[in-house]
Image (cartoon, rainbow, N blue to C red; front, side, top):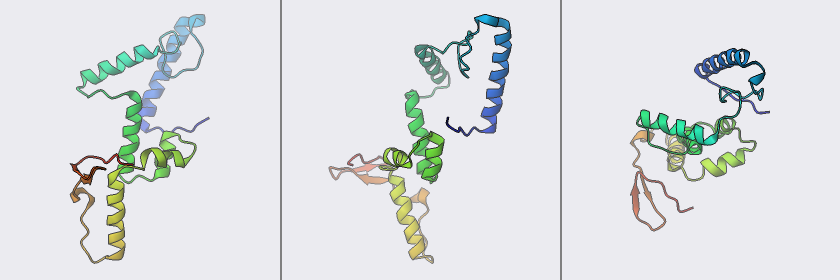
Length: 158
């Protein structure tokens, strides 16, 4: 089993879903499929993946959000945390990776802000009296493998 950390608001929502399921179970009786799923069809059966995908796409369209795959949301979640200086162990736990090396290999290898954070940190340690530029003001220009400048982009040379 895996320990899942859940924010209070999400926990409230999950409790409401559980209460609704209990009501539906009582109504359906023996027709309810007792798989113990949190998100399921009204019969208790698993949600068809294509149904879930169309619901997800409708949600994005309704809220004018650009489509990315559901799995890419996981990557976005992790990269935002890593880029915002979250500890890798925290990211590992949030993602449920058994080994921190997986988190390091997938999420910490090519995020340019990590190098910027590290050099700003060492500058503050070596020169505490100096005014080190805050991270928000550092230029985001990265040289690509061809040597061209890529403003605001990420280098994929590795």
